[in-house]
Length: 190
Image (cartoon, rainbow, N blue to C red; front, side, top):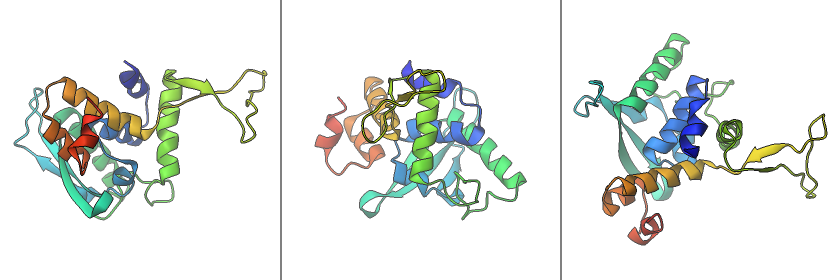
């Protein structure tokens, strides 16, 4: 419920695709941060229940490992919409970042964290009082404590793994999808 609440109210297409892709792919921040349009491809052989095709994302990530993750048709449709919008605005070429900042480059890790935190905070998921570096609680103009979510991008990765295992995916498949070196690391999600 917390996961869907975090996704439900996101109005910005880029941010929605970012959040959905974290969950659908189990990707790490570094995977998502460096993603280019050439790393995504149609997979018409993955037709979803809605009759639309799925897709595939290839991550070039941790430990110089490459892994391909298939994406179901619902997330793929959102990716296609984002690509069409980017193309209409003169972006969306093979070497362009999928998640483009206002300056035209890739979103930074900090910006990605901000998107995740804002979505979870807006949904009221795992809230805590925001503090300054010295531990003092930050307050709004009315003197009320400012609340912020503890949700991180890794939380979406964890949800991906946990839900995949709950739905009957094999441990080895989940290990490959997440890019874990050891099956023991994947077992922690059981």
